Length: 220
Image (cartoon, rainbow, N blue to C red; front, side, top):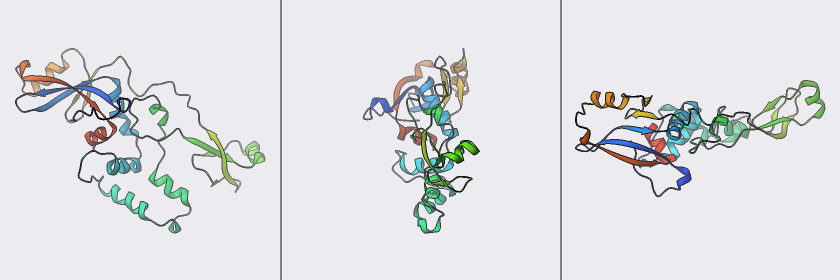
């Protein structure tokens, strides 16, 4: 699943316990709390452009990774001269797409997306704002419905009071194929039985620290 990453800063890691079959040196499953499960679930909110960027830049696997044809599309946009686009913002929104769920990432110990809180821009015309309400965009210098530019910055403030996606008091089991389940009474024993493990002494418990690069490698 992952290796120890003690050389990374502690603030950029989450810890989990892995159960390893000693004879085969194979990870059977992992036990973890909120921090790592939040990381796994956060991947489901990522735009395709962000996934393409993470695959290319954030994996700790030596060989270059791709996300199928999406990686080719991403590279096409990256290499495309801006003269073929309506404006610079078009390229920015394709290569650095905004995550609408960013509020849930604010308190996470390991933020995979890494994007800052969404700013919003409203019309430069005060009369337009009073007449049409606050029509906003997350990218600057776009045209308002009145034809003028949306370039008055308003730093967004999240009203979200949640901390990530799962509760702090929960403990989870994650199989080697990333199936996540609550660690209820007997869950780990049932899983060991399905894996053909009959002797508990054949298992070794190890604690590993997962960084952003390792989390991307686990998923992709």
